[in-house]
Image: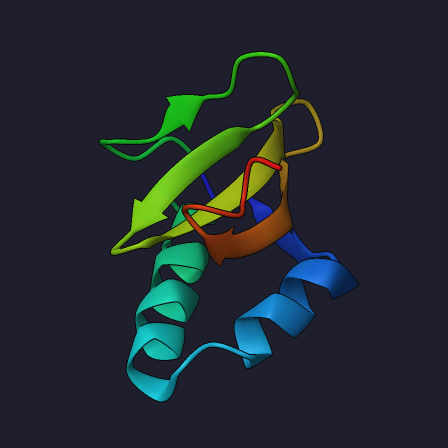
Length: 84
């Protein structure tokens, strides 16, 4: 079962600003979400809709729609800034 992957423009801009090595890791992790939207280590957020995965010191926040089989990446940022 494969999910359709969407990335908001805000998340795309954050992704483009990442250093090269980290960019590639984050990109690959986001792509893998289309196959397994709830991988080991993901966490449901409290107080706001969405899920998060950790990629080194960065976090990707995304939402899942199981009925439509879509996954939308909402934001990507450093761990100290992502939840503000």
